[in-house]
Length: 209
Image (cartoon, rainbow, N blue to C red):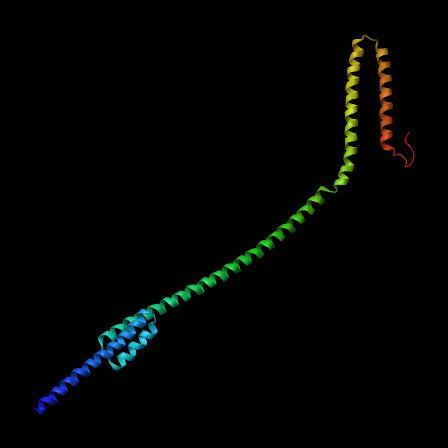
């Protein structure tokens, strides 16, 4: 009778102990799961590791640990990629700013160079064309000479026409010669007077009349 009581008590203790062990590993799992739901993955992994230290053979804790470590590895990889992308973007922005600054400086230098070249070209054109005031002073004399030549041509033409008219008037050769001599003398005096006026310079302060 006493032996049966001892065996029964031992069986009950074993069941109680196994039940206590199952609940304790389950508590670790539940605590870790609640932390995971709250996105507290570091805390969840720490709870799982504590549970596996006491209950290394628990399948639920081991599966949860593998899931947490995989997600942690993926998160670290994503963070590293984001960091590299951000660094590359910052470097590209700095390079763009540097290129824009360099282009601005090159543009300013090119404009200054073009302005300098234009100035040199203008000077060269002025030296080739000469002083406009001197050119303007030469033009009146040239126009005057051209006018004189035109007047002489007109007079010669008029003289030829007059000779033709004399022939048509049936004058004697002596009469035609006298008339022509008179006209030639008058024309010669006119030309000499014009040349004299062109070469003489009026005295300052004295009227030319």
